[in-house]
Amino acid sequence: MTQLTLFGAGKIGSAFAFQLATVGGHDATVVARPDSARLGQLLRDGAIVDAKGARASVHVVAALDEQVPYDLVIVPLLAHQVEAVLPALKCTAGESLNFMINTF
Image 1 (tube, rainbow, N blue to C red):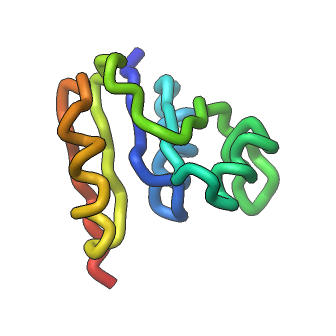
Image 2 (cartoon, rainbow, N blue to C red):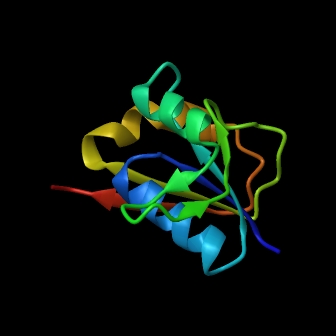
């Protein structure tokens, strides 16, 4: 099983995490901003919940664990958010980084 992390728990990151966990059967971790409403919601739900109420069990954290050697770190962010996350990504033990930049 591939161990993945999604560094961004917005709509795109959550949609990918949901699909990877449910359809792909991957062990997914979602990193949400500390003290954000989204982090609180994910922790309360204990999962990502889609519009129909289906649940995908994922690990939810407020920071990337620099010691975990994730197979893949997916970074689905808006273009203006990339610079702010680079310091955290610099120290990752992840095998590969995949940026998914939304320029809208």
